Image 1 (cartoon, rainbow, N blue to C red):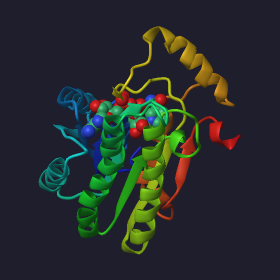
Image 2: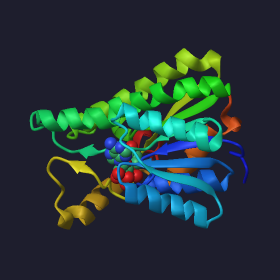
Image 3: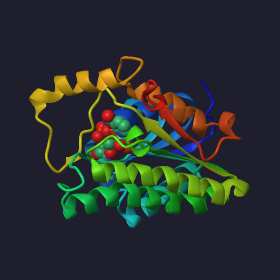
Length: 256
Ligand SMILES: NC(=O)c1ccc[n+]([C@@H]2O[C@H](COP(=O)([O-])OP(=O)(O)OC[C@H]3O[C@@H](n4cnc5c(N)ncnc54)[C@H](O)[C@@H]3O)[C@@H](O)[C@H]2O)c1
């Protein structure tokens, strides 16, 4: 249970459904974590959960779409933990509109948080990881970034971008000790909280879950811990020869 002993990790979007489960698992495996989220309350409660379980966590309000936020996160890791070895970026918003229906504002906001935010994160942590001599970056994409699934045009474009952003960083920094991989969840039990643009009809949730479940060869939706286990591995030194991978955790959805 100590595969992340000594690691100092920023978990962006760590107040969300998946991020808080991931942060708890990483801390359980010995990491010190900074849980950053647009919701200060969510970041604080996720950090409190880790602390209550005996782990080391700091909760901070942060906007992944802000360069200043990233600078503050990296400075906090250096000040409080003495450096930085890992970044997991779970932060994202969902937009469901199709190619013609997507409004400019929704396109810009989705790209800014999901893709520009991922780049800001990478740009901010690399110098600190070079100082530490090594580092592992894990960006959370989606099966929507691996295959076309119709609708959600802006979201799909950002998740596809995150996949190649990660591969680009992986190849650029492979010889300098920094690994970068992306993890792509399939349909999850917990629906994403922040939806930009038209919201889904809550009464349609059960029907949506049934439709999504039917798409998954394993016949079930994903759980946050399914994703967290993969991320934990990629953060650890067990994955020291793994970089540039895009790992689908999707019950076989994209194997079809
Ligand atoms: N839930 C799903 O069905 C699903 C499926 C595939 C992929 N994903 C991906 O998994 C990741 C985690 O999603 P989740 O299921 O935990 O959803 P979630 O909505 O519970 O968590 C996302 C978190 O990101 C935070 N966030 C949003 N904008 C931010 C910003 N500008 N700065 C900082 N934090 C911000 C939110 O406050 C939230 O806590 C996302 O990247 C998502 O795209 C989710």
